[in-house]
Image (cartoon, rainbow, N blue to C red; front, side):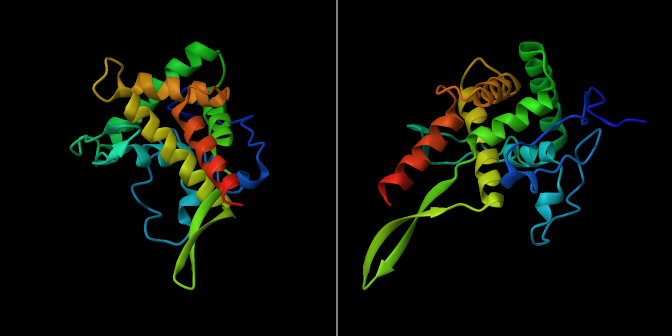
Length: 201
């Protein structure tokens, strides 16, 4: 019996073209991607967690409480611990993606992650009491973490105090990111990160 995501979308035929991310994108077949923190507090175990479940984990945030893109986002913890609720939001988003693109939404999601994962970042080093910003390559694990975080944050920003629901905002963000659309929040963040790294070389 073939296991499908949400009993709708097959895992067969899903490809990860980015060889760096391939090792860390888990496409373990699960109908409901919820492992009940089985891999928590184990080094590098998150690479064994289904990628859709990792997106749900990133969405379970209590708001930043600081300015992001000129806005202060405080969700007052309404999403914290509501994993089942968020999985339903993701299912609704995937249904919208399938309707818009006529493709497997899981493949569209993977394409979006590959497009928005930055390859360079900056770090601060000190030489003789003076701080410098230096460009550094990003490990594949962190590239995926940043991609998921920016995708989740883009969806929260697009639905915060707006008419659009979180599911609609998430679907729109994934579709835009999968096509490298410059209007995508995640694409903007990736380009900004790489631009700062280029200037710090």
